[in-house]
Picture 1 (cartoon, rainbow, N blue to C red):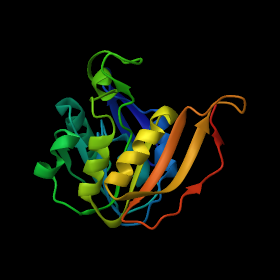
Picture 2 (picture 1 turned 90 degrees about the vertical axis):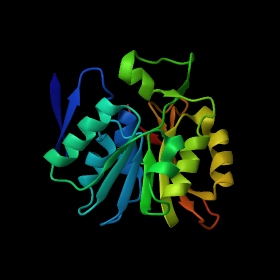
Picture 3 (picture 1 turned 90 degrees about the horizontal axis):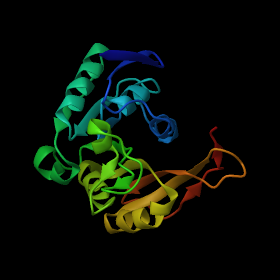
Picture 4 (picture 1 turned 60 degrees about the vertical axis):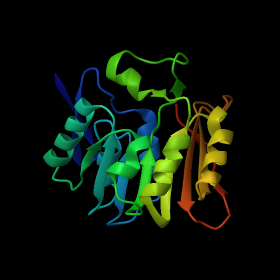
Length: 217
């Protein structure tokens, strides 16, 4: 059964058992630097949540996506079309990006990647479990895919758990992606951060802006 949720001026259709709107995706969509007319690629786009959110911020975006699960890709296409938005959804893994998408065509690539390795963490059954489970290489393929798709000076934005931030910094550096902006998210002032929002630039100059901690209850 389809369920409809309003995201700004647009409507997002969701289906039971498939990935849905999450706090992390909404925060990432607010955090990322966005310019009118940007060509955007969402890695692991699910049903198109991030693209719909970004369209509410700036007009004339191209909102492409790469998605592993066919049933999610179909609904992502339907969501773009129903809202009159421009974009294309490819089906495949981030590790396959070089055979699917031309290099260097995007101003912005973003993702809300899986947080848990197979057999670890709180995953769900079916499609939602697939969306929350990352491979043995961790964030390395996601960083590599972003660098492949970005033009020089393009931006890569993602969210991650604080405990994976060190690993993420290593892979960003190896792929020529310079961290430029970062924000920690907490659920209360006395709690430790449970989410990191980070934006990097392809072949960017060194210099990281750390934004004030955001409390999201």
